[in-house]
Image (cartoon, rainbow, N blue to C red; front, side, top):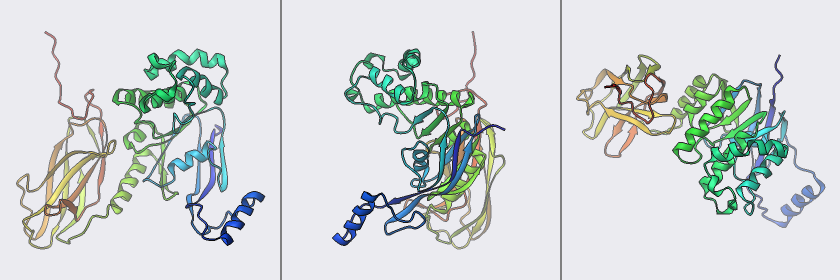
Length: 391
């Protein structure tokens, strides 16, 4: 049986909102507790306390890549900081065996007065590497970062992008035994993002155990073997990435706060396939009921396809725009044939009515996630179905 290199065993972490004391009576006991090293009962919450992480457990063995997803404030980054001992748990046990490559606030450990070259050696030493090993990797680090012309310049004169590029290159090339990644897949410009993603993918495939946090859900789906969904520090579900991402999309639907007018009641949204090769056609079927006369400023069925990679809308249309009459009260079923001229990745179909007078969605239906599989190799957002000839 493979021994886990990353262990999170029933971990809880408590924080306090602010350090304000309303009176001298409150301030003196607080100072006394700190001086004597005594804190409040870790099992209880005092005034202003809250749990950032609640009873979270997981293990990661070599060959596994675990993705942690969830909304802002769900405890994702806190979990990684606990794992790397930036923070200590209130309760529970965190273990990380071996040399850790940590991509968390990746340029935060740089010394501003030292050059990029000197910071490479400093960061390597902090990771416990010998100078000879750092020297062996140095040229590769600099080449990958793309800032060779500035490597002997103090990093305080670097742009934020240059800092991030060098920080990523150091952490991703110094032969870690374990890799911890927090939202660094959007570092630098578009070209460097692709290089960074490729490097992490290579490390994942090499068998290094990895824990990563990202809002780029398609990256989680592609890189990870398992995923955990957190909400307010609580583990909601763990499983295969696509299943966990689907649960996240469903939870997001429940929190969208879209108003209900009662004019449109949706029953079901179905896709003919949840995996569609690039360029292939698929069908979206929407069923429901119009309960009353539809106002003139109302679009009864609006269909939006949104990328889970960027959160941006890839395509949107509506029943009125397409000349489909669903304005009369009664049952309806709308079928829409679409062609998946999209980059490979995860997308979500969102259905709602559109109130044109308020420019907002109302009466939303549950979203459905689908995956576009690479069928035609291309870069960009849209597939133009290329045909190449040699003459």
